[in-house]
Amino acid sequence: MRTGLRSTLALIFVVFSLLYIVFAVSVDQNRMIGDQEGWDPGSRAVPVALGVLMLVLSIYIFTREQREPPEEPSDTRDAGARKLVVLALVVCLFYVLLFRIIGFILVTATLLFTLSFFSRKGDLLFRDVPVYGLGLFAAVSFTLLVYTAGRLATRWMFYFGRQLSIPLLGNNLFRAGAAMLIAAGLIAAMLVLSRGLKKSERWKDVRNVLVVTTATTEILYLVFKQIFTVDLVGGLVFW
Image 1 (cartoon, rainbow, N blue to C red):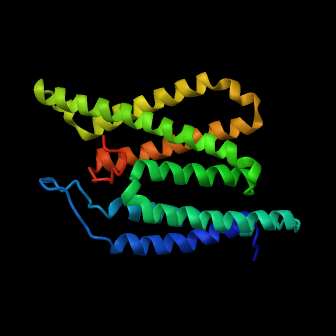
Image 2 (cartoon, helix red, strand yellow):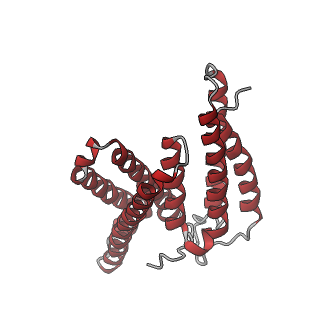
Image 3 (tube, one colour):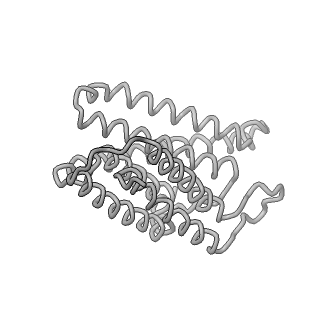
């Protein structure tokens, strides 16, 4: 059995995902008051779904790595793998402990950017920390911008839908679709404005990870909040 960088990380995430699912199932189950149609799957839905998603992806990556030919042994690669394993455990622990304090948007964006950034690097090096810090700040800020734009748009749509008696504007699926289009437009505009970064290998990676972070966080938010009306923890994002 191979114990390379990616397979080792995948195995760690398999274990973590199982523990996280157990933790998610053990938390109190709350539902929205006034949910007459039963759309709210409860407060456990998001953490359980994230745990299952991480578990499925981790198992897929681990099994795929076992089918590939073994790589040449490398002390440098092994050292990088060990550091990334520790980083993954710390970040995942951070996610579990601070989910309710910091809130879904901020903690999810931080988790996704951190793991994606250093996984692309294949190691945890001090020289990458300044770029990581700037990239994380940009990713979280841009994710908040996309979230805020979609949030304001859906609130105004709901308000005008009630005032003007237009049921479509109050439909969760319609408003989620509108927010998705707004997010796609903002991401496209960001890609156009930052196209000069493609010339730099270092900042091109940051740009790509930023897009993945923002898009994934926004999709998860829209699916659970707008469509299934799950009461996600706002934390520091109070609006």
